[in-house]
Image (cartoon, rainbow, N blue to C red; front, side):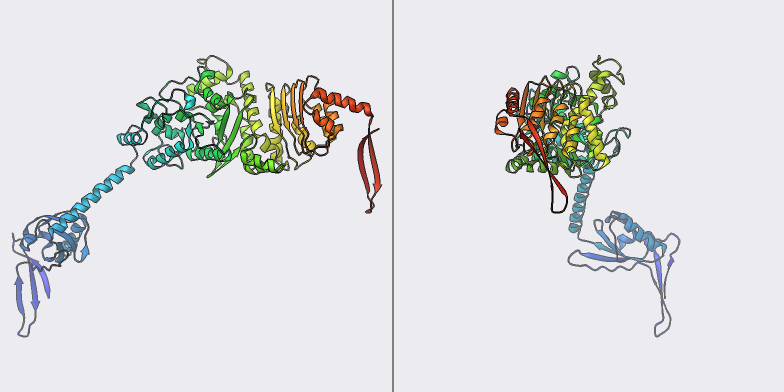
Length: 640
């Protein structure tokens, strides 16, 4: 029987009494000091010590390192510098574990067994390794903390190391960015943006206060964290941190800065691949091409502003990026932003605009362009109609709902990040002094709205009209795009195509096209190849042409049912003011005499008069029975 009891008053010892019954009777023995036993292992030099008085153990420690000994620990031979390995065969990893184990033995009024590592060299090595690991962990923790602002010293050192100033490029139109350089900016931002956060208020941004990553980062974020601070020291454009060589503008990109950067990259990649652009092709992005610490000049004089100069340098080649979201602020945010509309309005009166429209759906972008790309041209050259089919297959996934909302642009409802910018831009559209209070309605707004809608309608025309009008949505969009073109009374030139759009009767497509002509057109180019047009449709087509038309180019190739009679009816119904006519008549039933005069209006008229002198045109209809007892009719035209 073994139990413990307290010693005399003032004593620091814990007395252990043991009762045993040997062969010669009861034996009383008192052990007045703690029992200690130490064993050592070769690897760690472990010492196992039993503490009988846990209340007065005399150990002091830092973590698991013994820093000072007294009382029982000193009597048992424990040395400072040893490491506490385990207590009662339970491993300990920190000072709290040691305290809890010792307290547990004290509360239970029992002894405890402590194992020490006595090899101080091993202990010091472990401590050094732990200290190094702690320092590294702290550095990693600090590296994950968000920067306080865009001028944080660590942040500044990071972008200064990656983007060194290369030299000034004088003209803004020569500050386009290549796809390779854009990839470099995106990849660097992806690695560093985990310490950036959205500094906008919750009224301005749905991600306000959040850590940034590439799934939510937009141009506003990149401009705040990278473009502005990186260009401040040299007061330069960001492109001047990438190169000191002039990079010609191949395409201008108009987009809302709130679009995801990854979507912007996908759209540019899609355009580069679709158009097979060269490696050195340059995209003019205002965020990278403009020196942000210089005052803007575009509003003061749009014709001499940086955006207009870039448009001219690109030969009026523009890519408009639309977003694919259906929640607020809407699927076509770009055309709801005044800066985008202001830039697009510069194209409204330009005859040879090359406008591409792109939108991103996840990792894939949809892309609409006027005309063919190189691959489609090759297919059309090899087989008639195959290029148009390839174009339709490429563009058919562009949603009609985005097209429909794009066509409803209204500048007076446009938004801007700064109220002052909104007022000045509205005054520019209205033709008023920039410092006046903007008005919500103005007759000039109506003109700009019509011209912008018409600009979009021309690019989106083929995608909409090539659709089969077998549902109300498609029919509504087709009618709307026709109304928009006809409503642009300021337009004097138009180039549209219905080639090989034959899912429905050709007369329906032609009737819708005729309704689309603006009333004051001077120049008109129509591509009507392979539309199954017949002679009877030719007169209706000519009768629907604007009366003020001066130049007309109509490609009627691969309409095998068109004859001299159809051409005659077409020419006789043309507007009186028409001066020049060019007809495409390949693979039609038109005679060689007419074919030779296809680009000479007067020559065609003379040929028609000459044909009329040979005789009168007669239509002969034969009605004959057939073996299945049905009447079969056959109609022919001939001269008498």
